Image (cartoon, rainbow, N blue to C red; front, side, top):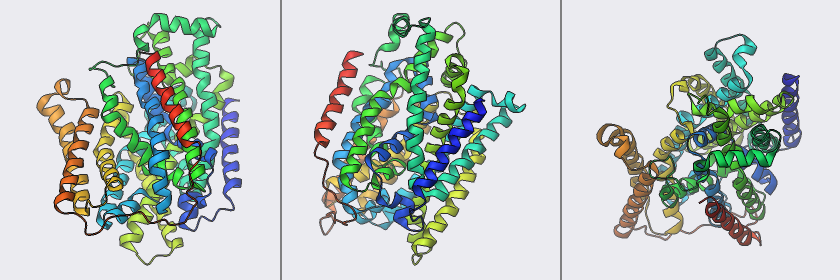
Amino acid sequence: MQIIIFFIFTGLVGVISYLATRNTREDTSDGYFLGGRSLTGVVIAGSLLLTNLSTEQIVGLNGAAYKEGILVMAWETLAAIAIVVTAIVLLPRYLKSGITTVPQFLESRYDKTTKTITSVLFLSGYMIVLLPIVLYSGALAINTMFDVPGLLGISDTAALWVSVWAIGITGSIYAIFGGLKAVAVSDTINAIGLLTGGLLIPYFGLLYLGDGSLSEGWHALVSANPDKFKSMGGPHTSVPFSTIFTGMMLVQLFYWGTNQAIIQRALGAKNLKEGQKGLILAAFVKILIPFIVVIPGIIAFQIFKGHPLANADQAYPMLVSKVLPASWLGFFAAVLFGAVLSSFNSALNSSSTLFGMDIYKAYINPDAGEKKTVAMSKIFGIVLALFSMFIAPFIAKAPNGLFGYLQEVNGCYSIPILTIILVGYTTQYVPALAAKIGIISGVILYSISQFILKPFVFGSEHYPHYLHVMAILFVVNVLVMLLIGYFRPRSEAYRITYSHDVDISPWRYVYWAGGFIVIVVFSIYVYFS
């Protein structure tokens, strides 16, 4: 019965996505890459949330909460502030210029080489880090919760390969053959299911702790683990409180404001009002996400403290198996599968976009028409998907703390890209030379810092937290770019040209709504201090 429910819900999502997108022209760049610039606020918010909320998030953050408590909520609550900044500051500029990819802005602001370097960095990050980790973490969660090895009568390793390829093939169909709109529509449906199913886990977990009473379960959880409910982490935690004011906000701003896989949903907005509504709605829901990705980890700690888990990243799937009634497992399996698909197909669609617009058409075949560009992008997506599916199972030997590991590795390209984008928008005379030096030096210096100096020279225990390192290198690279701009400025000031692709009249309540969200985030930290 559980398997039947799983296939019914998964199939329903596919049918609705097809019906919603069958009239969208997928043979044009706007149609395939931006959903025909027709996305509304609710669709944008749903797609943003589910693109972000996948198993590397659910499994990884709950694993971190199992070890350290509520302090890891910083990855979620502070994201809301970054989304507000994106809605008010960055999105109006993106839509005014009519770009399809973030690197396209870098070409108009700096030059073609800068755009290409950035596109290659994005693609490298998606190919080597994001896509394989999404597949692996999704397969790990599904195998643990639903005992795929026992169900199929195969080994754990074989089950991992089966789940990885099942997720990869299904996600590829959405991303490669459906385009952004199919991804966004399926994301929205799955987002509703995931929020519903995700909230069921802490609900049943608290009922389990309170012998049928939610209030008693919460009281038992808090009174037994007071240290787990302190929002301000110490210097030796994964998120020291001081990092909130340094690299944490930079990482959040990169992810929500410049990461192609995320911001592409807002770039497909039918107008600025809908784009801002979608971002603000996503920011508000983001504040509630710790109930799904943090609190269950603490509940798992309380339930399993008598028999501590060898791998903290198994805390969430073990909790689901323990507290979720069997009648809900099929539905929850389907929405979790949808969450995995979302992150995978979103990154895959964005990778195809970057390749088609910024590499194939720019260098390989400049005279290619839109149909040819889209076709080659789909072929690249297929190759990339196969590559990711082949290497994902080998991540099984990756270090514990999957989410923190992912964030640290992403720093190789996130902060350098953020640096040149912010300097590009806030200055008018900084030249392309400064951008090239800034992005290349940022990648090299961070890599040396985290993968040579930290492990082999100073030792991990004596080295600054990687979020502090990000902030230091950000400041250094900004200063370097400004100095180059001072001594070798552009001959003409850079100004954004209005493309008239969409209406850029702002939403009248964006500042009020954004301010309210910032106040709520601040209040949460005060309450749990």
